[in-house]
Amino acid sequence: MRITEVEALYLRLPDIQARTDSSQDALIVRVATDAGITGWGEVDGCPHVTKAIIEAPTSHTLVTGLRQLLIGEDPLEGARLWRKMYEGTLYYGREGAVIQAMAGIDLALWDIRGKALGQPVYKLLGGGFRKRVRVYASNMFQFSAEATADRARRAQDQGYTAVKFGWEPFGRDAKTDCAYLDAIRNAIGDDMDLMLDVGLVWDAKTTLQRARLFEPYRLAWLEEPLHPDDLSGYAKVAAGTDLKLAAGEEECTLRGFTRLMDEGRIDVVQVDLTRCGLTQAMAIAKQAELRGLPVINHNFTTDINVAASLHFLAAVPNAFIMEYCVEPSEISRSLAKEPIPIVDGHAMVPDAPGLGVEPNPAIIEKYLVR
Image 1 (cartoon, one colour):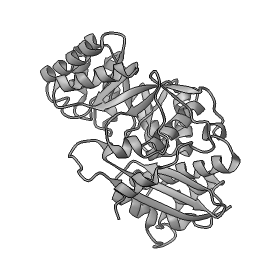
Image 2 (cartoon, helix red, strand yellow):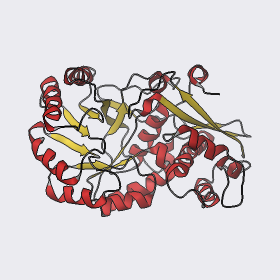
Image 3 (spheres, helix red, strand yellow):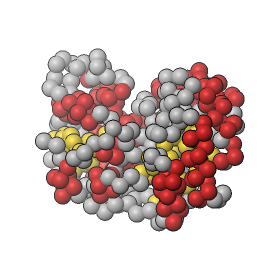
């Protein structure tokens, strides 16, 4: 079996709001083979940039587009192909958008392998630690405390046992922040887990002040309060509060996650499969396990990411919950022909060959940017 085509398909809502909301568009990766097996992946990055990285022609041996590197290759040789992509982009890659583009292809290659071998991906990864995963409803903060509380109440009514809110307009001042958290806790009571994604807005001292202020709200974790490069700040916060710190969605390499764990001293390691890929995510999870740290996914995009996340979380012992974006974007909610159901706050790990989801051609056609 050989790879015959690698395509990057950019889907976009007609109106993109100026918010930190990656459910508004998507870059879908399609890898075709001469055996008639097609694999699907996804990249959560800058779509135009990562699409160009995939489609670029060869400049020289260390500056090559990913498609050029993969045509004619055996898709079952995943570790070797990851290395080939890494070495073939050495001058302009090694971090950031190039790794993200590689990640989307990596997911599609795992999908192909599972389909070719008739096995769900989690089994190829050596997993099966869990067949269903607890899910938390992941939301953007709304622009009033009341509307945000309504979102929290709706998640509880739908059977979720945990909810997270993130990013703007939260974090601007302590009084407003507490008004939001008061509204959420009053809406959902004491039994539902509440997580908070601050969105990179504070320094270490402000984070410690807020951590003390937020103690009555019983947060399960505080996510990304600091800039991702402020590792010393993360370490100061970790030493100064009992509140768990979660981070990692800006990282896409094992090196980056190792720095975040060892220098930043975070408590919860968040891996986005559409930025890291499954091949690399397994190595990240192993390093987290050696440090006694849990891993979870990051996901604010489509059911391709949901499916990849479920296989990942099923394949590692140190996972415990899955992020699930509940923003109403049709790209996010309806890309899959058969969206993964959330029942009683849990998702079943797909058991079909490959990743277990197939895109709906009608949704691709509706939102494809040509």
